[in-house]
Amino acid sequence: THRTGGLLELEFPDRSKIVVNTQPPLHELWLASAAGGYHFRYDGACWRDTRDGSDFFDVLSREASAQGGRELRFRS
Image 1: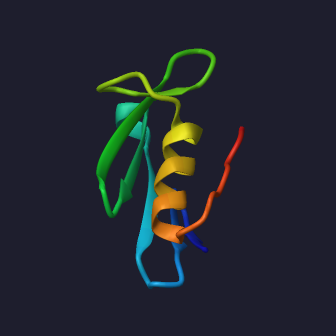
Image 2 (image 1 turned 135 degrees about the horizontal axis):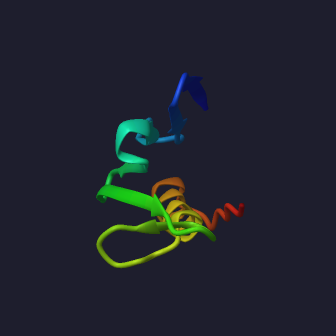
């Protein structure tokens, strides 16, 4: 892992990365993975994908598991 300000990089054994970035002016979190990009907004209870309403930690767990080659779980 590597963190700089509002940017967090998770690097996997195959050298692929997941990047989580805060977007304060938009009040969003952005997640970029090998599968694509996601934008999340806080709904008062959790961070939800702006397209399909998925929970941030569920998406992060799914994407990290895919890139890491084994099940990884993240929780708030």
